[in-house]
Structures are given as structure tokens and as C-alpha cells.
Amino acid sequence: MPDSAILIVDDEERQREIYRDILEGEDYHVQLAASGEAARRVLEHQRFDLVITDMNMPGITGLQLLSDIVQRDPTVAVVLITGYSTIQSAIEATKKGVYAYLEKPVERERLLGVVAEIFSRLESLRQRIVGDSPAYQNMRRLILKVAPTAHTVLILGESGTGKELVAREIHNNSPRKEQPFLAVNCAALTETLLESELFGHEKGAFTDAHQQKKGLFERAHRSTLFLDEIGDTTLALQSKILRALQEREIMRVGGTEPIKVDVRIITATNRNLEQMLKEGKFREDLYYRLKVIPIVCPPLRDRREDVESLALHFVRRAALTSGRKVTGISREALEALQACSWPGNIRQLEWAMERAVLLGESDKVEAEDLPPEVLENAQVTIPQGAAAGAASAPSAREPGIEPIIPEPSWEEHEKAMIMKALQRTNWNITRAAQLLGMTFRTLQYRLEKYSIKRP
Image (cartoon, rainbow, N blue to C red):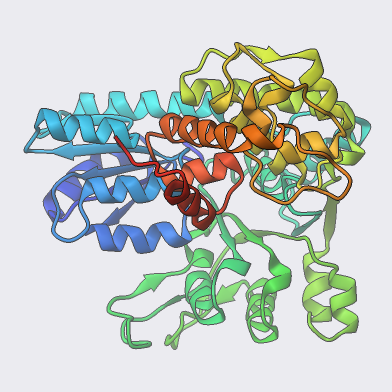
């Protein structure tokens, strides 16, 4: 089953092996972690659709790991397994966002039933490339044309335009689709960590190399490896990536024997690689090796015909994940969405719709539910007395734009919106800050300012 990445976390080796055997027998792709600390390290560099973790472990517990995962990526499903079930622990896990709570011993059919239910739900929510604009149709035709080949693809476009979605769509329409799609953000890791992540390392290769590790090139054998933000790699690492492409073999850090790999490489960047060539910051030979087939992701401002269908897609998905009965978008809100230039592209639209669904009160997304920066960009003014969806703007307004809410009532509206966001996220401050468009530090300051404390 493609894209069914599962991480199993348990300090008992026998239990890990039992769960792995059950799930791999149904063609799920499984990785193991022997502790909460080990799981946290893995999750820093790799994304999973589902994490199955023991509740009671030394060090980082299952509940602590659940909190970490929800803060990092709330779309990841988490299943907690425990042999010491209590009503209090079940309530706490539910509040933190656990998908399922299972007691030991877990029967095979029960485990498979829960996992199947989760992946059925994920498949219905999985984001796809949406749109009918000419720009989208041209890109879609190129994706379907190159997908069956083994050629290297370079995806270009601004941040937030959906470059990883394009890479996944190529993989899902390729002969390699039955194998897991692997991806790494090259900008998120230091050179040393990225080299180890890509090529793996031998035991003892460096201070913390306590055991042998297979890198992404090796794990993506006969599959697809997506290198996002390739323009952020160093020249030294670029030469090693070039060698892997040319020779179809890699060498683990600290290794002495080359390892043959059959990997389809897809890369992406929002940088101007041609300018980087002139400045000597990107290898010319690697550039032309990567740019066999270039695909350009157009910015959302160049495909305005797709704004409505994308927004509705994100509204439906947010409604399903949050349990809210939001069925559409009002005419006024849609006009504001169409008028916005979307500097953050699809990612910004997705965030705006998720925020509107979570913070709104109606069964439709209203204009006042939209983030203030969207309204300001679209030059929309919400009448005084409307819902305070735009009243929580934490950032400075553009010059010449008057506040939506009169100054005397600003603090009352802001406090109300903060309370609403905290309630909707079960007092997850990180998630609430994201919904409000604030930094974590800004929201902490507001909590102290308004003396807001968790009940």
C-alpha cells in the first residue's frame, strides 16, 4: 500500500516485532523505534501517516510523544497502546488528540481494523492537486507524461505552490507507486546530518553513530526520493549527490564498499538556480543532471480560477478533521478570497481555510472568519459589530488601512478570539498561535497580559 508509513514505538522488542509482523503482513510500510527519545529523533527528519506507541515507557512516555506529534503535525494519526488503562489516562489522551486508545493484549484483527479505518480516512482527506485553470491543466498533462518514465524531474516554483504534491503525483502515477515515497527537506538539516540522512552511516562512523543506519538513497531503492529545497545544499554535498546520480551507487558515511541503488530522483527549489550557477553556489553539472524534465508550479495569483475549488477542498477537509459542520463559503468570503493575491500561495490559502473553519461560528465560512491579512490584501472591510474573526490580527497593518474593530473594543475582541482558539485546540498553545497567526512568544505574552489561564 503506497504512502502507508507507520512508526511503531515500544520499549519491549517482542511487542515491536509482533506489531511489525502483523502490519507488514498486510503490506504496510513499518519502521520501529525502541523509545520515545528514538521516535522523536526519527520524527524530526521523516513524516509518518500513523504512529502506534506504547503508553508507559521509560523517559518520554506515549502521552508526551502524542503531544509532540500533535504540535508538529496534527494530520498524523496516533494510536496509544497500554497495559495499564485508566479512565483518567484515556480522557487525557483524548484531549491531546489521540485517534484510538487500545488495551493490551491487542488482538490482530482489532489492530488491523483500527489501522485500516485510519488509512481509509486519510485517503479521503489526502490532498490532491486541485484546479481547472489552463496553468493547472498544462502542469497536469506534463505530470502524467513524465510519470511513467525514470527521468529526473526538477520542480520549480515559489514557496507554498505545492511542489511536493507534484512530486507525489508523479510517484503515484509511476511504475514505482507500490513502493513508499520518501522525501527530505534539504534546508532543514545541517550538512553533516543531511549527508547521514541521504547516504546512511556505518557504526562508529562518528561519535553518536551507535549502530549502522541506511540512508534515504538506500531505502528508496526501486522507488522515488524527493529532495526538496535542493538549492540549499552545499557544493560538497552536491558533488556526492551528483555521483549517486551518475554512478547509481552510494557510500555510507564511514563505509568502504559502494552500494548499488535504483532510485528515481525528483528535486524542487524556490531558488533561482541559474543565478546560483553564475555566483558559483550551485554545480553546473548537477544542475543539468537534475533539469532533465523541468516542471514549473505556477503561483496561485496566476491561477485564480482555482481559488474557489481549492478553498472548498480545504474547507471540507478541515471540517472532517475538526468535526465541525461547515459546508461551504459565503459569497462575501469567496469574493475576498478571489481578490487576494495570495503571496503565500496554496499553503496560505489552506491555512486560511483551516483557521476559518476552526474559529468561525456559522455553517459557512464568512468573510469575518478570514485572517486579517487576507482581508487587507483583498481590501475588504468588515463592518463594525461583525464577528471578531478578523480582530485577532497580531501583525502590523499596512500603512493607510484602518483597524477593522474600533480601538476601545480591540482588547475585548482579541481576548475573545484567543479564548476561542485555545478552546478549539484543547489549549494547545502552539496550535492556537498558528490559528491566530501569532508566534508562540506573542501568544504567551497575550496570555500573561490578559491573565488567561487554563481552567
